Length: 198
Image (cartoon, rainbow, N blue to C red):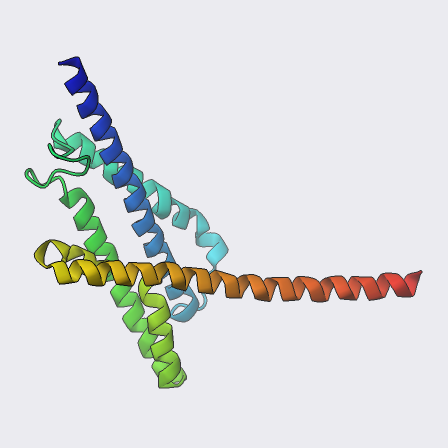
């Protein structure tokens, strides 16, 4: 009996941690969308002033969602056969509901950004921006919601999320190369100034 109770507690803990970290990932995707909104649509917004709210959304909101879900589940938080949220009593909506909301908000943001990009830039740039922003904003998870209905959606979901890793890696590598180029220019300027002084 003690072993069963210990396993159930461990499984609930694993489910709660998975719930927390997945919610944090989605909340940070929402923050990415809000940052995109502030850079493209509402250009006058100061990011520095809003960073504390972004941190609150990224980490505080997931903790709040998981806490409310745990408190309202009344002992039936995790499923019987696996360590994830229970589908039988609707606890899964403590994850699916906020995820669907975040995806919808990011779709609205992306739509607005595309409209602005098309009006100010070339269509090809807009298409490229959409392809880059889709995985960053977590919109590939629309297919993830449909996975229980079709095995084809499962494969599409896996393919799109594997491209998300490639997109993030490509973007961060590009940013790093730009930063290292600026640092090398700064160091060469310093070298020239020091050699002139000596």
